[in-house]
Every structure is written in structure tokens, then in C-alpha cells.
Length: 529
Image (tube, rainbow, N blue to C red):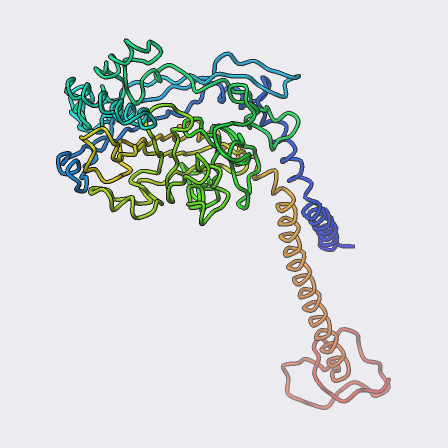
């Protein structure tokens, strides 16, 4: 057996083994199962887990952008006309949110933690100075007191209204952005505080929220079931809330939005419990995106999250009292936050009923600037980019006994909206890309084996064809040589070579011919011996 034949046989054997083993591994999904099993064990909130430290101290910077609606025609609105607003901002703050008092519970299957948030102003990312810029907006303490007195007698409301007029308090107030956001001593609340000390005399949309947390959380670590990774077990000791009007609406579902279970697919709904909204919301898959070279799935709240109960009956539980429902795109959260009739929506009433948008001039909802979304890396479940956008509104309407409101048309009045953004930092993105490359290579190793087998199969075909072609050439050459040899043997004889002219031979007829006298061949008649 020649070397070429040995090479062909060896290539064929290796090719067959690679194809058989590779196809078997692909069909059995051995490596994919191994990787998935590894991810389920590694991505947990345990001290040995690689993701635990980043969960405690999130590396991506979080920014809070505050936008306010400055009222440009308060007199027209109080006279029964349509309010007009102009958006000012952003006023951007860097948000720091480390986990504190982390304590493992129930053999490491649960985790207790606080999540205080601290805000630091970032002037280079802001449109102005919040301590200088002036804002005219709704006087929320005044509206809160009117709302509180709406169930009292008309006479009491009238006396309170007269007292408020003496203080010079109006329906709209003019303050700096910093005062409206972080707090100021309100003259009306100060009078109430003197009568009821439990009422704070300071007011601000973020009053007492800098350096504080939203409650005590207990999370599932994912040690028992990877699908429970990061899910909230209790909030402030509660497994369900009590202020909504249905059991489903009172459920505390999902995570706090910081982490999600690994191996996310496009068909599932992801749940987030938003403590500032006093409810859980769900996100649905929208599209595939790429962030810093990392493939991700974009999830966003679908239209039915804040849809009117007539179109989505599951939202009836958010009508409090039962049957008292707002239109599509709004959620009344004053049921869990005492005081003013606060309503939450998406910015500029995005995805809300057009009647709310048309009730105020200056609003322009659009998906690019006002949609809430979350970009998740599906293999690890890590948020790569997030934009949480929510708008704070207040219900302004006529209240008998308060003459300042007698011409007001009931309006869901926009106050401000926040754009909370976070994007994975460059170092974390580089580590993520490396991890995903390793996962991809290991998961697709059987495919590589099959590919090598196909390449060797092609090499085998080439070697076989070349070997066969060479054998054909050899056989043709041998046939031609053999044919030439037999032709010459049949048609040739020896002849004498001489420079002399032909003359009769002097050799006697009976004398034998000498050897060596014939050195060339020419066709002559065969001689007899």
C-alpha cells in the first residue's frame, strides 16, 4: 500500500469519526446543556457568585434627569381656559445606590438588603442651575389640603379657604427648581404643622428621598431555582399589598429591575415591582438591539399595562374605590401616598388617551424620548441599558368652598417627569463580550467538530479524485508503451550498414555470417537460419 493510499484511508477514518461525534453532540446538545447548567449555578446572589459584588455595588453610573413643565398662562387656566406649559430641563443628578445591611436568610436561599439612594448634581449634563432657574407650577400643598377637605362640610371648607386667602396662597406657585425638587418650608403646611405636628412643614417632590431607601427588601438568591434569581420575596414585610381592589393587583411580582434570571427568551413576560408606583408592571419583548457590541433583547411595557379597564379588565383592580377608574395611560397612586391626588403616567402622556394630551398645550409625546425600556443580555440576564421614564401629574378640579377653583375645568395637570438612565460601563462591557465569546465557542464546539469533519470530507474527495486520475494516466501510458513495443517487434529486422554501393556479396554461400556486422534495424525480409 502506497503512502497516498494510507493518507486517504486515514483521512476517511478521521472524517467519519468527526462527523459522527459532532452530529451526535449537536443532536444531544451536550455542551449547550452544560453551559446552561453552569450559568444557572453561577448566576445567583450568593457570596461565592461572581455577580454578587456587582449586585451590591452596581458599576454602571445611573443618572436621573428631571424635566419640569413651566406653566405659561395660569390666569387663562383659572378662568376656564386651556393650560399651556413649556418643558424645561434636564436637571441631571448622578445616583448612587449601594446595597446595605445585606444579610443571608434561610440557608442562603434568601437575602435581606436595603437600597439607599444618594443624588449628586451633575452641571455638565444639565440645562441650567436648579438653584437659580425659576419654575411656575401647581401649588401641590394647597391642592392636597383642598383634596383632604373635600369630604368635610361646605362651611368648614369656606372658612379654610378664607384663611388661605389671607396667607396669600394661590393655586400656582413660583419657586426655584431646587426648592420644588428638594424641598422648602411651605407657609400653608407650617400652619397645619402647628395644629398637627405629624404633618411635615416642608414640601418637595424629592423631600427626604436623598440618602434614604424605598423600603426593606427580601430577595430570592436563585439557589433553589434559577428562575427566582433576584425576585422579591417581601417588601416591608409584605408579600402582597392591600390598597388596591383586587388580589391580582396587590401582588408583588418580579425583581426590582436591577437583575433578571439568565437564559431569557423572547416569548416571556418580565415583571418589575416599582415601589414608587406601588405596583408591579410587566415588560414584553420588542426587538433585538446592540449595545457596545453586545447583543441584547429590548423589553418595554406594552400598551395594556396602563390600559383602561374597559379594554383590559385585569386593570380593574387599580381602580380605587372600585369602579372609579381613570382613562388609558394613567394610574392614580394617591391611594398609597397620602396627600394630593397624584397620578402617574408616561412622559407627555405617551400611550395615554388623546383627551389628556389635548387638554394641555405644549405636550408632544413620542416613543424615542418617552418610552420606558430595558435592554437585557439574554444569556446572563444582565441589564445592558435601561431607561425608566415616568411623569408626575395632579388632578386639578373645582372644589366647592374654594372660589379660586370655580372656573377650572378638571384637568390631569403635568408637573414633571424623570428619565432614569443607566448604560453598562466600558470595562464591564469588555468583560461581558469576553464571557459571551467563551460561552459561544463552548456551546458551538460540536458545530466546529462537524465543520472540521466536512472539511476533511472535502479533502478526502480531492485526494481520491487525484489518486484515481493518476492511476488512469499510468494505465494509459502503460497501454501505449505496450502497443508500440508489440508493433516494432513484428515489423522490424536487422540490416547491414555500409558506405559502399550495393554489390554482390563475396562471402561464400556456405560461410556463416560474422557477429557484429549488423548495428541498425530496417524493414527487410526475414532471413532463414
